[in-house]
Amino acid sequence: MTLHEQYLLRCLQLAKLGEGNVAPNPMVGSVLVYDNRIIGEGYHQQYGQAHAEVNCINSVAKADMHLIPLSTIYVSLEPCAHFGKTPPCSDLIIKHGIKKVVVGCTDSFKQVDGKGIEKLRLSGADVTVGVLENYCRALNKKFFTFHEKKRPFVMLKWAETANRKIGTNTNNRLLISNNFSNRLVHQLRQQNAAILVGTNTALLDNPSLTNRLWYGKNPTRLVIDKDLTLPTHLQLFNQAERTIVFNYIKQEEREKLTYYKLNKEADLLEEILAACYQLNIQSLLVEGGTKTLQSFIDQDVWDEVVIITNNSLVVNNGVSAPILSHHVKAKQTVLLNDIITYFTNPNNSK
Ligand code: AOF
Ligand code: ZN
Image (cartoon, rainbow, N blue to C red; front, side):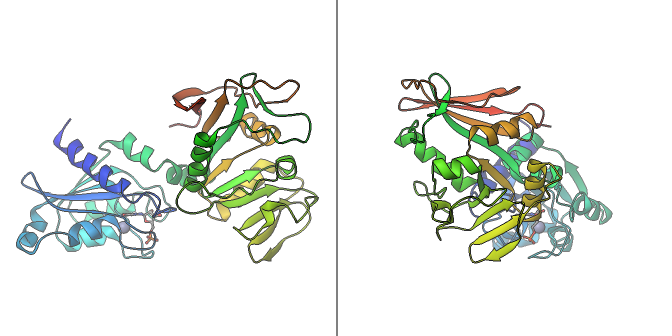
């Protein structure tokens, strides 16, 4: 591993400390190095607050401050060029007279998108771009997918029996996953900005779609209800969290309830994903049912799939699980008796 990579790796460690607190901003870490010694460290800690570079430069001890212009700054993401909630980090670096900058990967947010690097180079700084680039991009995969594909990062999740059923043919709710994998599901809910179900799942399962078994926030709840047939006593419509109802009838905003009217002539999923982009929903967890999940697979708008398999349960005449057409098995773990398999979409990874 080169020295650049070692310092960038430290940036990535720092960046990860912001997990759960910075979305929809990316996690970013930064270190300042003089003569092979780290004299400053920082990361983006809280959405809306100081960026990594600011915290890094501010962390330098008084006795080391004169070394700042002679140091190299490492950042896991291109320093920003825009006035957002904070002033541009590229200007800060220039102001401190730092002449050597090492960047993990470029920022595809349209207000930055190479402009930070350009500014730095124009100031006469020596800028190296693309160190541990794949790791830097993987850390913020949701952020990059959202800005580059103009749609949220899409994760599909379902639980299936040993004979690949996800439900019964009757209206009885089928409990497939155990308490341990249920906790994982709630962690996924916490990690995604929104959660989507189709009409049948909302009606038959009556899920609340909130995060009760993990720390942190609930996702925004999204439901497809084209003709507005779902009864309002469903748990989805309780006050626990905001719910957006995608439909063909009306557009209306109430406290915690939004009716979002889609164009009937257009493709349903494209419309939903475009609405998510417009609403700044950076990641989407799709929790069912088979019809909704299968439509994401068939239209190839998914990034990851998580399947929970209960191998000791067999259901006769149940509803079949979705079928993945092409995929790469990324990881498999076991939670008590449930097998958790993660797949990634080879068409969507760059
Ligand atoms: C950096 N360093 O640590 C982060 C950056 O609304 P603002 O002002 O917080 O700006 C958010 C955007 O800034 C975000 O979309 C991304 O492009 C960039 N994030 N940039 O130089 C950082 N977190
Ligand atoms: Zn910045």
